[in-house]
Amino acid sequence: MRSTLICIAQTLFLVACAIPSILAQTPNNASDSLSAYCPDAKEQSKSLVGARRDVEMITYSCGASSGNHTEEAGNMMKRGNPTNVCGAQCTTHCFNPSGGGPDPNECKVVSDALRYDSQNIGNLFNIPQTTNGAVVTMQYKSCKSFFVNQAKGLDLQYCRQDWASVLDYVAFNCQATQNAHGGLCLAAISLSPIAGSSTPESLELFGCGHLISATIYARWLVSWRFICVTVRLRPRMTAAVRIPISTYSKTWQRQDNHNQGRRMPTRDDMAATDNVILGVRHEGVPQGKFENIGGHECYVATPSGDYAHDKVILYLLDLYGLKTDHNKRLADDFARNGFRVIIPDILCGDAMTEERRNHPDFKWDDFRANHTDATWIPILDDVVKALKASGVTRIGTIAHSFGGTPAFYLAYANESHVTILSTPSRMDRGTFEKYRETSRAPLLLHGCEVDRMFTQEVQAVADEVLENGQFHPGYERTYWDGCNHGFASKDDADAKAKAAKEGVFEVSVKFFRKYL
Image 1 (cartoon, rainbow, N blue to C red):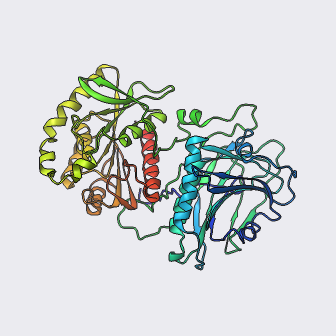
Image 2 (image 1 turned 180 degrees about the vertical axis):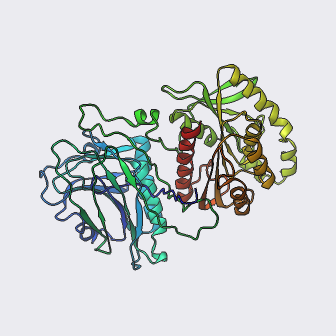
Image 3 (image 1 turned 90 degrees about the horizontal axis):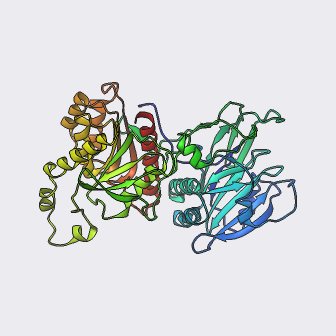
């Protein structure tokens, strides 16, 4: 665990790859920067995208294009049977020296447009290949982001949500205030050989006026392989997997069926076979339903396709309970990845709201007195008993804040088989030592920088008690710079918090797939 640094600075490739880069150029000199890696660029289409139609999207072909035709942007983004490269990891570089480069708030407009189109048009889009490469650019004022396809002979397919996450990360970490004026995110993938293909040569790419270069070599392998290296932004503070905000990226492998006469798997197909993760959503209407389980009201999210009926995830609530949509939507997102999820109302309908919390007469002591262990233990006991009677044999728990103690209650009794806690409350050396001595459930902890309850000191204690093989079933912890308590469940408008929430979700899905 100590040697792993997970990256969320997601995607975009070169040599069966594309790259996203955020540059400081204004519209007047943008064509000069484009020529650095797309010589003789020819505009193929132009349109305005996003909710306000204020982000300009342009598609270019590079060099000797395969044709002088023009095509509507929407068609360019939808056509064909491309190779899906969603989820590849990448390395982020910031361009130096400072040059008054992109305003992160203007980059946020671009990433918001990508997320809007993801919800209203579709998450996937295509980058068709021409003889010498193809480029899609997204620009709003000072912020310009590029997706470059230099995979000769292959149309690529990528995810708008992933592009938005990369853009958020690079924009906020490669600013003029940090002696940078933009950044580049590079990723490499390896493909199985395609019939009739020649051995690929090495390619050298220059970005942003030749300020940075990278050489990436294609290799023929049986499966996809993604390579990721991330620069730590701050010194390592504990032995946890330290994740600079938004530096987690989906990683997955799948067999390359491109040339075997079969259709390429869809994202739903791959999610069902553990090959891809359908990401967390930041908005939307919950799709689950309420059911009575063991005599208690529960929110239930069920996968639309096949799933293991003998397995279930118990989602144990933070203090905001079921009165807000963010917990229900997270349950839905785990269901989209193949798990049946149940949220028992361990707060008995007495959940926190912002209005209640900010009321001058509100007293935390009174609220806590209404939610002692004696109030939720009978609920969990009844729900677990009913689930086991229905044929459930394996239970995973995921808990946020207040839900951490109920999750440990089930783990201590070995009623649960996997435990995931995000910024839990009421944790100390004694709780971790008891977990080590009594539970057999692998444990994943998500911590952050700003948290008065799951402090960095408490996180370090967890490592001291549980890591280095001291807890044999398995222990991991992630740490998210710059985030606040509850970031992994709440709907936060901050781009860094959004990206970190996406990372926590994907790490958690992988942990459940490994152990549940």
